[in-house]
Every structure is written in C-alpha cells, then in structure tokens.
Image (tube, rainbow, N blue to C red; front, side, top):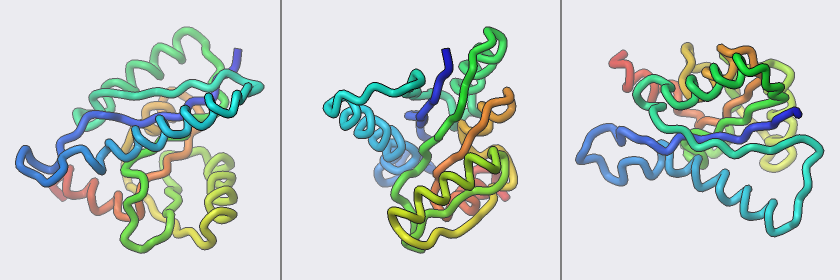
Amino acid sequence: MTVVIVSAHYDSTGGSSTARGPGADDNGSGVVVILEALRVLANAGFKPKDTLEFHFYAGEEGGLLGSQAVFANYKSSGKTVLAVMNQDMAGYSPSGKISIYTDYVDSSLTAYTRVVATSYIGATTSDACGYGCSDHASARSNGFRTSPRPPDTFVSYGERERGS
C-alpha cells in the first residue's frame, strides 16, 4: 500500500500566552485548510488511487515531536510514502504571493508544487528556512518526499522562535 500524506500541526505557542489569537495562524490555519480539503474530497466521493492520509500533529512547536514519531514509525515499518504536503501558517503572506521553500524538501515535488500554485495564483516567490522549520522536515529526515507550503515570512518567524 502506498500513501500520500497531507499534514498540519495543531499546537501553538502563539508567540506568548497573551498574543492575539494564539494558534489562529500558527497553525490553526493549516489545520483548517486540510480539514476543508478532506470535507470537499469526501463530499465529492473522491476515490484516490493511493491511500490519502490526513495527519494532525502535536508537538511541532516543541521540536517536531509528533511528526517525528509518526515518520520514524512509518520508516521502521516499511511504509511506502509517495509524498507529504505539509501546511503551516496557510494564507499568511504579506507579499500576496505563495512562497515555495527550497530547502529541506524534495526538489521534484517542490517543482510540482510550484506548477500547481502558479496555475492558481500566478507568480510565486522562493525562500529557504535555513533549518527544518516545520513537520515536513520529519518526513524528509526519515527518507520521505516532502514539500511544505508555509508563508513567505516563515523564515523571519522561525528566526524569532530560535532567538536569532
């Protein structure tokens, strides 16, 4: 059995306990995107060729804990994962364009992600996190193809998280 995974994390630091809407963007938005995709596919009676899994991880903010455990288990059990598309901070883009991240990803899957995004919204931008900045990194570190769809400001957000 082969698997395609769509994922997001639901834990949040929100920057602080008094932040406005902690978790609404990081990462309630990613969770809502994949829940809506699941709803649309289910209502349409979609029957994929490969198994389509929807993952909702805990512990991303604490160091990719949930996704790392899942992907380590998938690797040790020999699961065949064709692709992982991780949603993190979906819809947040001060530039108004989707930024396609080019590090800690599978280059061919990321190229395909760019084709899809460009066909829907036109121009995209490119960026790099400089580290494994979301749950896609857990998939990649366990040998699975992945492409994240984080916002174009994710690098500066990540730098704030690391204290850079």
